[in-house]
Length: 104
Length: 154
Image (cartoon, rainbow over all chains, first blue to last red; front, side, top):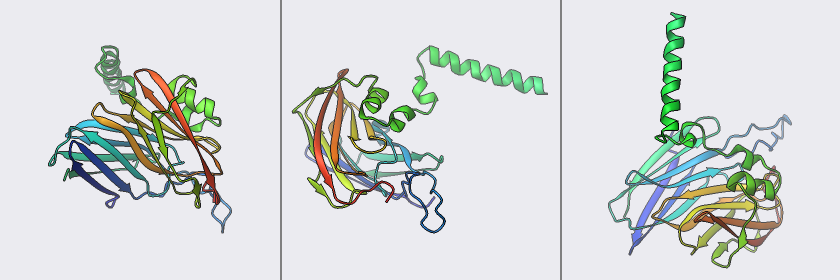
């Protein structure tokens, strides 16, 4: 899969803000194709994990009610500039992607 | 040959069972952890009990929900939850009147602050409920968001 994740992490004092945007359709399975009248099958991210230096900082379980092209942000304490932040996701069709960045 | 693969399969299965019982692997990491029951629940009560094991929680002023008073587009409602409750281990976001109310649940690590921000879909005007689990106790807060164009089903 092409790069689906944009991630930034910025340290300010003792707090680090991690922000990420994921490109994903997040289909609920309730929407209908207007031309054919058929339902568009559900396709959404179920699990998102953010790791700080290899330690899990957040594991999120998402339902289809998270918006298309999801945005997620968390804050870490005790992280420093140069530490690695990795985000990975897994959707209900088994597709996945991950990306990492360094804290600035 | 078939017998051999059968034996290998049962041995591998046995090893996993031993690891689970020894507490090396939590069952959640072996099987998919995604709580399907909580996400498919049709009521707020069922969603809470499906996710936290109980629908009981105490209203708390230490949870701040940042969301628009009026959302023009229900497909994209930015929601931020900030909590000052110590030892927050999980934050769940629930849109009370969505067909399936539970939108997202975040399990936070020890050094992660009590803050999450994301964007959710809302079918109609309703309360956004934040449920925070900290030290085995559950707290909640709610905020009404007026939706002018629904975002579920479009």
